[in-house]
Image (cartoon, rainbow, N blue to C red; front, side):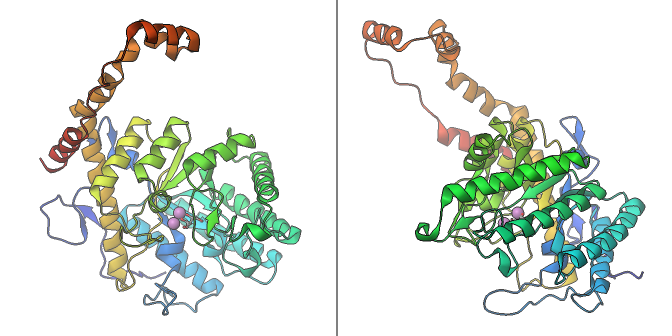
Length: 439
Ligand code: XLS
Ligand code: NI
Ligand code: NI
């Protein structure tokens, strides 16, 4: 097998002053931050679909990037070429993990049986490469949104035959994920939603999605899958309204259907912002519920209302993300999957490298700055102080659930009007963050 990304070297850390575009400015894998190496804090993953499959095609025109890697597209030869390209790419960037959909790996055949056979074949090849390179699988998933059969969703489809086919795809995607030692399995419900309630039984559909997830958990555990199942929330696109709207909704859903022992959230930055939240918000909601599983690392565009899946460059956001991750004690089975694509005019092999360098550096810098915010301590101690009135006897009684409404009413009547609750000092806190970010 010959080199694919010729003239593109192994990317090394050179420091922030380096002008070499093909070097890391901040991502220094062995540098220690708060007792762990950057590499340990930031298990980066390559998304097979964007990096090895997507050509930049959009609604208005064809792709601009050639991802044939020297093979005839949509053949098994092409599938193998993508494996070769992917592993060379990950090795050169020092990326330790990858994520995949079933149909990213092989062209889908007319029958499930043949697609499954192709998946067996390609996963043997991937396994060989994994053994040679030490690169691992972060998570797998089944694409249950692309093919026309899924026009009304998979678990939520009105067709029992489509539901059954989805079950078949999930079973195989789980088999392959386990075969490759994947640490997670994702459900992104791209078409699990609706366009109009005039034709939709929402309760029926949600019960069916839960049943499909339950079957996936039972099967996964029966074949030795010990990792996490994830829901990846997203409010819309492609459907007008998607059931896994945001982390809070998805967490409510897994609890309602008794799936909360097995499921965590895979939080994607651009999905959180589409839901009208910050990235940090959905991370916090997941973390405070013990469900911060993994991260799809990308960024949206403030001027556009869709999932632009950009490589992240906004260090303010990556800093607040890493602040949440550090406070949550890190990601256990999860990682930072670049579910991101280079812009359509960035169509060269070199752009693939530059895109990952941008994203990895943005998270590395976010990590460095988040650690500084924590070590600085001003923000954490302000928040602690802000709630300090609850350290009183009265506060403790309320917090421990022992207070009654009548008793509090009596105290309130006796005390008279309370003092104002104290300044929130938002502007000062924001200036603290800026001074840490920019020195
Ligand atoms: C699309 C999603 C998708 C999932 C995996 O918006 O982000 O790529 O991560 O199915
Ligand atoms: Ni995603
Ligand atoms: Ni997305």
